Length: 115
Image (spheres, rainbow, N blue to C red):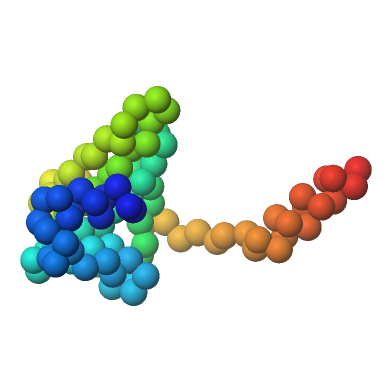
């Protein structure tokens, strides 16, 4: 997230970049009225799943831009910038997931150490 924010500030100036990533408004940054969704990955191919509120019920991606920051071993971060129009050329799949409790994960870790 910091890499993307620094890149946005370099391009547009610090007064124009507003971090809204914790507000769950459908994007991570507002810049001059445009919305940027940022995804980070250590994979050369993967695009991390996004939150439900970043798409309409019909599968239309809402932010103006999707930025995929790739953190590949031994290389500087690589930025893939994709426009809303480009994202919406494809049909995306909606998945509903359940995340296992961190308490369960902790209990299993403690149990495995006791064996």
